[in-house]
Image (tube, rainbow, N blue to C red; front, side):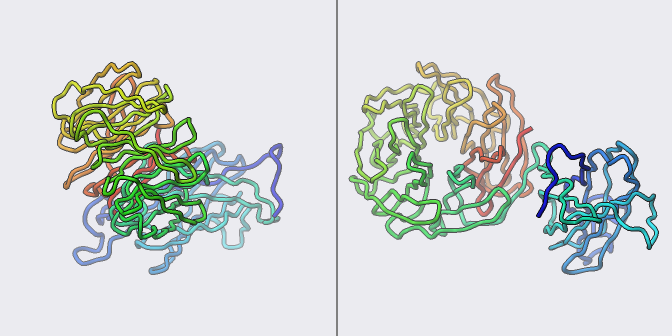
Length: 446
């Protein structure tokens, strides 16, 4: 395939934001257009980037697997940026095609398109925003890609991918994909930025997977409830299991440190564990008894910082094994998730206190009340936009929240509002990815 070099003048294609919804006969959201018992239909919104100076008409064709072909024509003007709606689409797998003409709409039957886009196949679903990538080619020379436009989701739009059964932790992998733990399916999952999923059944000795981290060796390291407790997984799926010295220690969070090792919490054993890339284990007892160490993060100071859920403390551990503990101001706050912030401090979540906490590397703690206190804060991550992002969940509705280092909150609701959600991380694609009970979700920060 020949491609035009960067010095060549090119045209832009249509930016597609596919939004499927049930429509009333008048075009609004709600009832089905054909009345009770009719199949719901979808609407696709085409957001046009700047039109080529000689483009006059765009023809969009939607060919569903089930249902009639739908074709619409949209008039174009030089430099025009507009939004067009293609409605009346059946839900399900649909192939979209685009042709752009230099003649005005309606296009005569004998007219020849100047540009043709590669077909794009997507599934039109209720309330789901999809990612579309069009590549425009000159009709006279289809081997030449005139423009390959990778159009991302709208800012802060949430996309869901149905996969898994009780998904927990998630991390950006060394291969540019996202990796997550699936507790009920006893698997470690991999999802590409485009949504393709592969599940790797975990070795029986691991038990139920919980935490996940990328090691300095370029492998995935997973904690589990089984007799081994730690699993090493290569990006190609080769596994090795390592036994934690303390039996039934319930390892949870895991993170790579600057000393070249992995460090993890042992919730039931009240210890912090260290494992080398070759599998050698060392354990360090937390000073406060029955503290319930839960999640762990690497601080900007090079130390390990962890939450002590049972004793209302934040712990700090040097790679030499020296502990320090700091009390959270709100009593019985049950701190859980923790992450290094862009401001050099550690940010943590209080599941019972319903607050976001911040602790400096010197141990100074401050707190912010969350704006949706009926939902339990679960996982937290530093985002690519310089803010902190965290998940909140309950049985009736889950949300994703953003908080600036100055304490300003913004809330975002996933399409499946009742889905329980947990871990969150930043992917190599610059998006935030988070786990839901039976979904992996993506949000593009503004």
